[in-house]
Image (cartoon, rainbow, N blue to C red; front, top):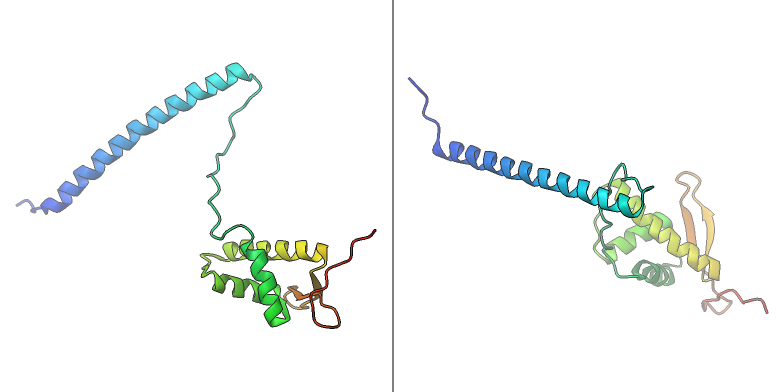
Length: 156
């Protein structure tokens, strides 16, 4: 006696097989288009070679331009002195940024450090040390005797 197979399973199998066939046809069209484009490019520039690996286009930033740098200064004004990981956490919390992996968190922290280094170059902030265990830099805003921000004076 044959087992009765639910119709929903056979219907879904048929749909998946049709989708696979459509994707195979699309892949064949893309291969043909890539071959034609490679030929056209080689006509214009014979020394051109197709790249070995094609990367995805960069995703647009989650934050507006300059947001990290601005947040660094605002938070350092409030907290006086912070390490890079602490500053990274506070900025991420301010903009409700969540990290999917350790790598994305380190990339974000790199942006924080780059902003701080630019500010350090013009004299708005200074690195005051490094944590001996984690090697994280500690930062503070350069201030004068009255507590006002004191940028470096330009040489005349």
